[in-house]
Length: 269
Image (tube, rainbow, N blue to C red; front, side, top):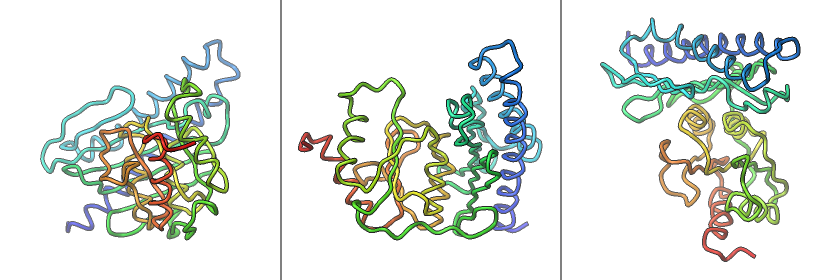
């Protein structure tokens, strides 16, 4: 099997695992109105069950691969230094409230470089996918980011912690950008935010509260669709650091980076 065929096998396995996890989430969601357990208990069980469904598909096929998952999954990589980065349920609060903006996110990296990524939205049956060097797709149709170049014409989105105070940097960045963008949103799913940038539905996204599993798949998908992902100051992205700015790849990236930096420097009004 050649290198490209092997990577396509990885992507196909990721798609299959994401579909399986999505089915688990939708099955668990039906229990929320009939169970005596509280939503917090149920969503934890759903999260773990979805992650187990993913691992049950990937681990037997790739026994030498490592795993990093939100629900306590830590397994070192063996031969080839491959590692799957898994978020079985991104958008937990949305899921609990049955707000249809949550997803399964699965990425594969090799020696720190993203190889393949999938984000599956079970409520809309949308599968975003990317293979490095081969573009990104939505339900097998090619994706391309938007072409808006100016922040004043852009629809952008942010993530920040649920307990963020009104004078905290995440809220001040959000309020500052409102003055310059066409519109600013907050959604509750980092994975879908990144996928939507890739699909041209959003023009930019930033956060300082993410983990690697929140953004790994989405970063690859956005980049392969023509987008750009860095830290907020424009420097190289590091999945281990909760600092990301992802845009459509136009001049908008630098403009949004500048506006976000104004809050950090204290020059924002």
